[in-house]
Image (cartoon, rainbow, N blue to C red; front, side, top):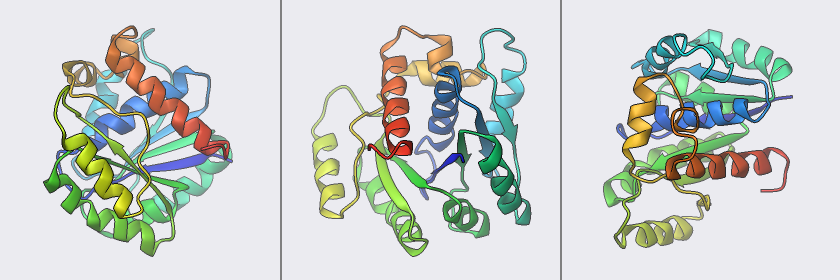
Length: 213
């Protein structure tokens, strides 16, 4: 049975699609059957996947779909039986599709930038995960090289009883460059610091799937 990860964050611009794409590609490259689902009406991942089709030989194979509404639950049921991991990019609002995605997940992965605005906006995602009784973990994304906000936000998440993953994703241009080519940063720049960060995230998710994280 697949381990289902819903990448969810009510605040726009938190990097949901980039996180979902990079995580799915890293999992696939390590030898797993991975499905990536785009349920965000902005369809950033759908555009990313279209570019990915042009990258023969550079991109790890992924099952991709963009189900919505009542089709989402059926797609998840089928993919749970066929895949090792299912990664969902969810809508940025607490609508029906977002609730269905979170309800069908084993883990709600909540990316947020180290800022007070992102933390405040995350409260809706925290509530939705709690209402659906789903495991929640936060991921600091677009983290600047310097600054104290990272520690402050980590402390506030701890106070809110929200687990924070040890891996973080830095504020690196490599992520945007790879995304526009339909690639993960592990594929476009495999020896970069950004790629190492994604591989650390992948390892953390694999540990959770195995019940060790």
